[in-house]
Amino acid sequence: MTGPDTQRLDDGVMNRTTLLEAIEAGRDRLTDALAAYSDDAMLERIDETWTRKDVLAHVEAWERRVVENLATLRRGDTPDRSIETDKLNERFHAQSRDRSLGAVLAGERDAFAAVIAAIAAASDEELFDGHHFAWTEGDPLADWFRGNTDEHYGEHLEQLTRAAR
Image 1 (cartoon, rainbow, N blue to C red):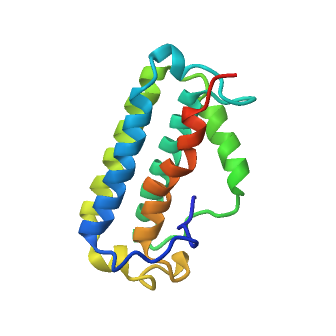
Image 2 (image 1 turned 120 degrees about the horizontal axis):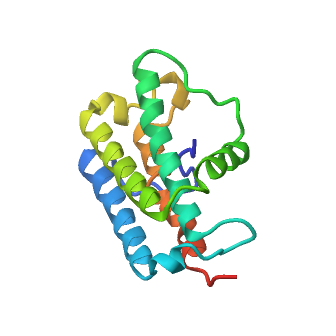
């Protein structure tokens, strides 16, 4: 799972409102970037192996993962960290590369909605107490949600908007 951005400057006290504002602002940037591309352009290769559609499927996979990890933590279990991030990314790409653009677009919208629903259903202690879940190693779970939404979108905006190869 994409972890919190430990290099991010503390921009004040995080609460449910500021968390959702940050995520929504990142979402707006992602939506605006994607709006510039036709369906054909979404299928253009932007590096050796990935298309813009693949990048969006990648974002979807990590949004789903953070929601799944919260469910795992609530059950009292520990999310699996045994697979390194690059290997997970390869696995996610292999699982999604043959999906249609429509399926990826719909899937990512659903994954984002699941993130928002998970945040809405989470208690303040679950989201903002870095010691509530030992697995987060002192980071508030809210930071993990940001690491897999607005911060993650920001990591991929250049990739999404680069010229096709």
